[in-house]
Length: 291
Length: 230
Image 1 (cartoon, chains in turn purple, red):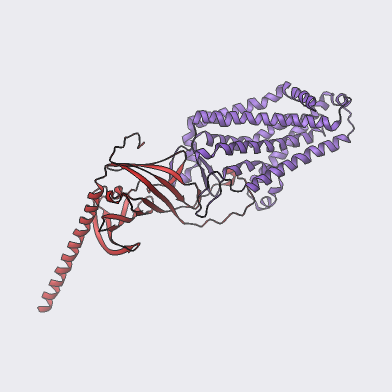
Image 2 (cartoon, helix red, strand yellow; image 1 turned 180 degrees about the horizontal axis):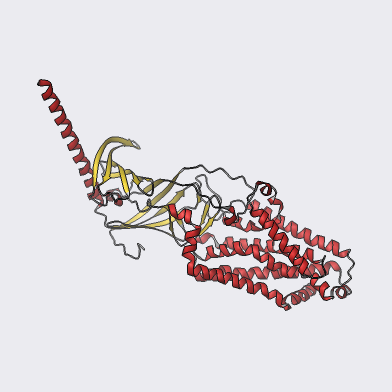
């Protein structure tokens, strides 16, 4: 299995298309950082307009932690598209090149072969996320320094102490890894049905875009079913940036407000991953491979 | 004729009484001010608790810096705080910054079982942001126990003070600001909110906000630099 994984990783990282995602992430993160560095104060004034009209802000809200939060919020919608570029190509790409049937002649079970391909795309997703963490969190901390974090929700503002944030980011990135692996699994699932990678890539992107739009639309019809969309659970990492409250309504540092809900979201994503990969293996094992 | 003389005498006595009362109010305020004028600057260490319906913040460790005549700054260790605009700069000393006011005696009352004089300060300067300040002064100890300041732009702020070991300087151990809050709302499309499935409580509207600062220590008249006030 390890040998198979190494071969698949070699194939993934040999392709130039793999590095498009890394360059794209670097470009987006750098542009966001540059824009905030140059015009961050104006941006903060815009975002906190309602707050600044009535309140005086003590401290530096425009710090590395806030920039990373902003980057994660922006990128975690777009990174799945970059993940799809690789994961949706895993089997369809082989079919397109005509090497899939040849691969089937090797003395390796189809299940093992598919699992190694899925693991390779998961490794790619995690490495891409680490790249986001390096650029989005660590570089932002270097450029903008650290302070508390202002998490602005639609009906409340959560303020986290500076020394109570870093561990939340570690958990948030771990959660994001689960979310991206689910996306990789979806792309991988579509990949077994096609003979060129374009179809599965577009299909994966479409599913994510449609469900994300339905999730964000504040319409009662979608609100009642949005918990069924896995995209609703992909932003569960935000749950780590909310704290429990004491009887006086004061936040308790070092706590997570609704950990069971965050774990449930992680569970839903893992279940989806299992279903996508399991479904892919089940169908592929019965498939007549002609290309 | 006799009735006219009686009416004249009564009016005169009433006028005299009101004049002497106004004098006493001004004197009392001057005495309180003189007591507080002994503080040229201070650095105070304390903890701040914010109770605003839409702000969820932990208790913050803060430092307050004051320098005569009216420079005041609150800084906190490793974090961000939101404080009501205008209310933050209202410290005990700033209530009596100028002599440009008329003090009116509004009688006596009790506050937490303590007898206090109610003094209303009307600014004479028409451009002043403060419209009216009502102070509840403990005459025996010359301490302002409570004040209510109505401003043109930032609503009304109530400030309640509890005194302890720094009472001789007129500096409170605990200050409770109470202020009006406006509603807060951001579109969900901007915040891209995570819905954890829990039922959202309906937030009460127009609830008063409260900021409580408990000071544990003051360093008085040891100098406060401009850097500290930045």
